[in-house]
Image (cartoon, rainbow over all chains, first blue to last red; front, side, top):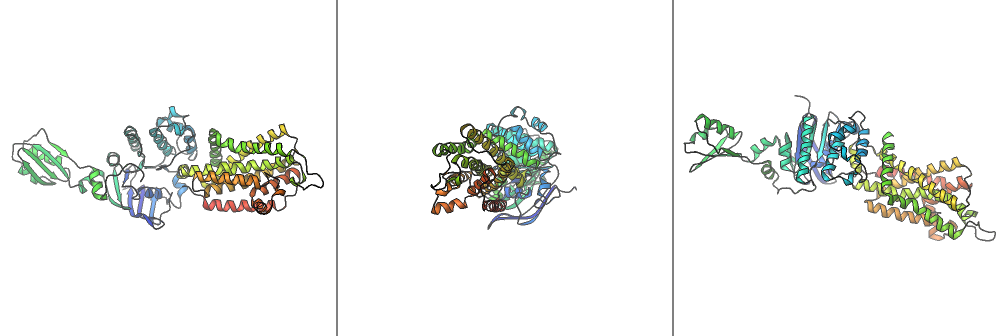
Length: 306
Length: 249
């Protein structure tokens, strides 16, 4: 297996006496879209800011692209792209000026005009930052993060404060990054965002990583499994022997199989083997949201600051 | 270096797009020049009277003083607010994350200081040349040299103010307060000789007073006394503190 692009081991960070991050460890592989999910104030932003060398860790070790973000920050910044939470550009800066400025910092990167075309900003070339819509500003930030052709991009709450249509646009942007093979670290507190975009997700709560895996695996592991339902007149006792099935409940003609793993596939295969082909076979899977609520023990998070 | 120049040029363009703040720091010195010139004329003190304006005519005194004042105006009014606003809005953090160094930020502000001070000084000299009969510099290179030294010194002062101010609003208030104190007590308002007691003490610790004296020594050949030393010391202290206290967010 290739070297991970990012490896974090036992990261600790305090602000004076307040613990922000406690014993956080994870690795991110090349080309992966890695989500960091958690309620407000759980240490997500602090973690990624340490990864970018914007904050000094109090303990643990961090390697990003083989570099130490604290001692080799300027070298590292040439190879990473950053979209920061709650950062802005001067109101009167024009789109082309921002792109030109940031591209001048990394002469080995791509031509900024190409990046501008690619992210659909060409017709906003002479518009000032303040005159752009929220979605356009976000697009500009992503374009600025990419203008140095980074190997890793950090996106911190890129969709917070955007309307649903702009969020969809932002998701498409991340998908395009995936196609380009860029490694992405995505900080979010939207479950659907993490579930849609991320290959793997670290869920943080109380300043620690409480779970880390593929979204589907997390759902399977922490949510008490899925429910497969259908109607039939036949005898379905054999379904109790299907891999992953925990319980088979029959109520009149309605059958409900609960269990874990790829339950629907196994149930369907077993049914077909017995010559049973119900028309209404369906699965109800819990979402990442229910996992999140169980792990963090909190109410759903409101959009806002983290 | 390259980044500082590029960023500095961009900052100059951004400031010129927000004309009100610039107009303020450019026009205030002009207004004061005309008010004081109108009130005092350009007659040196007569024998037997109290010696004011260091023995020269008021306009002769004020023109070099105001070339020093415009540098101070840019540096205490525009620079601290600009720096604090960029910090407050996350612009500095954004720059930091992209690998722009603190030295480049300071260098860019220095470009702004030189550009605006030069524009402001040119405006002032044109206005004074049209309206008054003032003495030309004894040595133009010496005046230009002093101008550069003043710009460096006041830029360090302005950057320190920007680092100290908790918010952009605070920076603005602090800058205006200092500007008025310096104007009235720093040798660019009433003649320093008429200031007594506490006002005299404040006057002596005001960087502008020493800047004015340095400029007048290059322009009129008047004695600069300790002013080089005091101004140089202030520059050194502001630079050291400014570097220590600089914050990205």
